[in-house]
Length: 332
Image 1 (cartoon, one colour):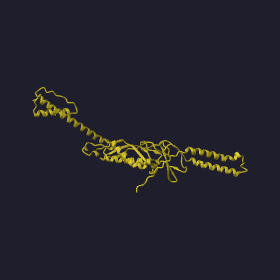
Image 2 (cartoon, helix red, strand yellow):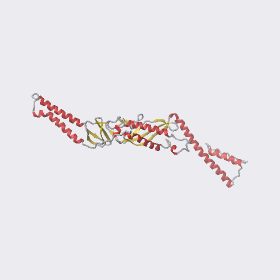
Image 3 (cartoon, one colour):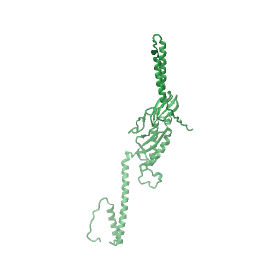
């Protein structure tokens, strides 16, 4: 049976100033009650009971209005407060203003005193939001880099940032234990799953595979990040969180294979370049023989053609510039 989530009940009545003035009037009234024997000139020694009664009454009034002041709350823009009353959900304040709520209500505090932003090791930094309020601002989660194996089994190091914000503070505090830790954990899981589904890069042996499997972490990072965003949104919806963007910020081979993979990439590039050079050289040799034959500049037999082709290919495909040798005698 699917669990039904808690429906948010928003508190919108801004009656804080009215209760504040009432509390101030109550404190003045309490002071007047306590000082009434002085104003009436009553001697404490003659009527100690009456004086004590006024003091007790004034103290009770001060206690009552002190409790009333506990229900006054100030909310800044892009913040929210969630209240419970004797263990049951009472309501949520989402709009800025000066509010008065039941003074016996408890304000739920976020599970962590830090909001995940940027840090080298833990991925977190101190939050500026008060401990008893939930920030509705757009925030950045930057988890630590992770070492995972890609689809080809190569160890890679990958890191990503997540742009997110709380859209339902009631779910964020009541549906999960710690919504910030929950988001960080789900982000780690999504990054690992994405890295396992795609190779870091193709080295030329997968050219004929289906288009779906031709995506790579290096070449299709934007498309993969978009898929990570959709999956992450599905997982964190229970916590009242909306992910606005996921972006891969770091991607590299692990140290133990980085040097080998660099040599492999260099070898692939050299082979591709050599292939292009040979294709161009063959085309130029063919054009030279064809032009010589058409214009009858010189008539060459098959043996001389083979020698000329060999010499031209050496010149065109060589690493260094060829040193010409002038033959002053007969070529035969």
